[in-house]
Amino acid sequence: MALLKTDKITMQFGGIVAVSDFSLNLQKGQIVGLIGPNGAGKTTVFNMITGVYTPTKGSVYFQDTDITNKKPDAITKLGIARTFQNIRLFSNMNVYDNILIAKHTRLKSSPLAAILNVPGTSYRKQMDTFKEECWELLEAVELADEAFEKGTSLPYGKQRRLEIARALATNPEILLLDEPAAGMNPNESMELMEFIRKVRNKFNVTILMIEHHMKVVMGICEHIVVLDHGFQIAEGGPAEIQRNPKVIEAYLGVDADA
Amino acid sequence: MSKGNNNSKINKIKLFMTIAAIILAFITLYIANNNLDSYKIRILNLAAVYAVCGLGLNIINGFTGLFSLGHAGFMMIGAYTAALVTMPPDVKTMNFYIEPIIAPLAHLQLPIPVALLLAGSIAALFSLIIAVPVLRLKGDYLAIASLGFAEMLRVLFTMAGSITNGALGLKGIPGIESIYFYWGTAIVAIVIIKQLINSSYGHAFKAIRDDEIAAQAMGINLFYHKTLSFATGAFFAGVGGAMMGFLVTTIDPNIGIFLQTFNILMIIVLGGLGSLTGTVISAVLVTSALELLRFVDAPIDFGFFAYPGIPGMRMVIFSLSLLLVIIFYQRGLMGMREFNWDWVIKKYNQFTNRSGKGGKGHGAVKNG
Image 1 (cartoon, one colour):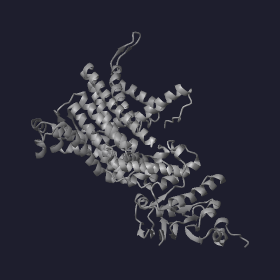
Image 2: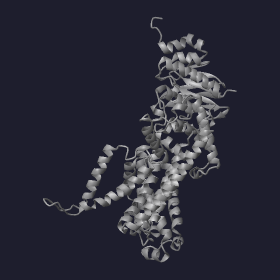
Image 3: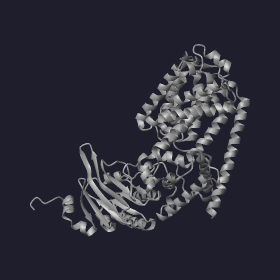
Image 4: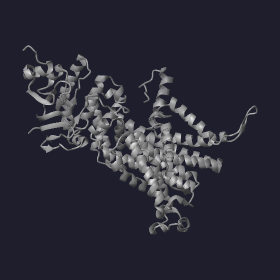
């Protein structure tokens, strides 16, 4: 059984087809890369999976339930969390609060119970559990020392790590990473690669990532899907993809004399 | 774990300090009550009314980032609700001489606290009805739509003669002069709102304000939380409106005029969008400044120059000073900061470290 399955999803904006008949089977525990030149429709695929867009055609299944028409928050609740291409941290919150917010969706108490905030009630107990989980997570991603610093004042690499940690805080089955290595120098990228691998093993998540940085993609992805102009042009292991003539053509163009 | 013990100890200290602060607030009220004349007390009471309304609007605008301009509409609903359920039946018959009041309202007379709660609840109820179409919109569009709803309500209230007495308004609302009533209610409102803002729900509001898309991706149901914020804000607008009615004892549909929303908006922008402390400070400042500046309307003789006194001059000066404040404090007097115990403890630690370790500053404090 595939953990996540997209069945020929198509996204059309007016006359423009951004993604056409995209099918993907994500198996549990995999790290899958989604690559393609700029404007190929990679982020659109993410947006369709996470409910930001509803596909014009086709359906998305998560653990065999149809999630095609669900809202982003409902999909996060089910267990698909994401990060964004341009980091979207909560700008007025510190690192700790940025992560704590991800727990809110699991809160079962009413606003009234939250206002009263009586010690010993289920609201208090839930919040204590959430806080403990947050600290554990902060320790795990090595951000505990910066817990009370403003999220947006962290160095770039740490902001990326924080955004991934925030997504992890929702206890996801699947983590969608949108260009996690964007804007990083080679050193930072290598660190990130290690970090992503660690996250997968430690938190037992399945990862689908969009990435331009080929070293990162080839280094950690077990399976790669290539998109070009909205079409799925290739799929396979890293070595296979590197040799695929269609991929080379999409990235480098074809020689006119050939 | 020592960390946990330490935390609970700090929490106990905070609780103790909060109780002490509330007692101190009442002592201040007691002193004010015994030493100020009724005119000054009335101004302070008005400040309490504006503080409650401002806190309500700050939940919506400052903490959730929803630019709503319908606040006066909710205040009006609150004011009318409270007035209609507290006025004695004979006063009602005297008021409604053109169109008689509808049956159940004619004999209804409830205690003041119940009236306050009812005023808030009815305002919140109306906000829920409005929320469905309005909260789909964002930014300026939300502002225009909410403003439109408030204006619509005002017109409806003018026309619904058998309930609201139309443009004639209501006279003879039981007046309350006690400073304890107004500031007591304000303190209760402050405590409730502070609890809400610091709760998990309050965090969700702030997340929506900071980044709606990320908030939704974190599993926060946008519509539910926006509605919750909107309704809570409207609730306190209703309570504030009710207090306004008890203070001025006569109301008409003009209480829901746009200018009223603008006043409240000015208070929260000046105090700092996203600061409860700022709202309260600014409510007191604005209300008293408007009264203190009254002398510029009257003639003044400088000796070498006799100023004839221009009615309305105080608004010119007031607006000018407002402009200056906004130029120099773009995020309001308090920004998003709060005066709370964490802040006090932080400052205290800073102070003791500076004097003890020669300014080395353990855990350098950043104010954001």
